[in-house]
Length: 88
Image (tube, rainbow, N blue to C red; front, side, top):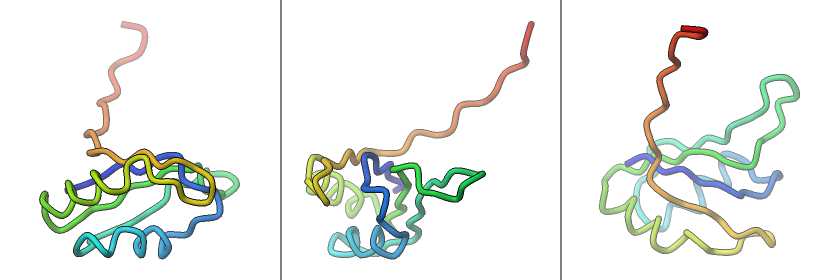
């Protein structure tokens, strides 16, 4: 199950994000979204858990939890929107 994790502190690393979700099960991937020019984290990322049950447990526990004075937003990731043709 892929989760969206928002309102992350800007100093969090991929490995810290992994550690945050480890107590809820096996973390398949954890990655922060970074600005393509500066390389700085944008304050959100995605975590993929090995099962839906683990993902739901993590979501229920971490959504609304405060980390470094920021309240996390954790919910199921939505598939990316398809880009349509412009000007038609």
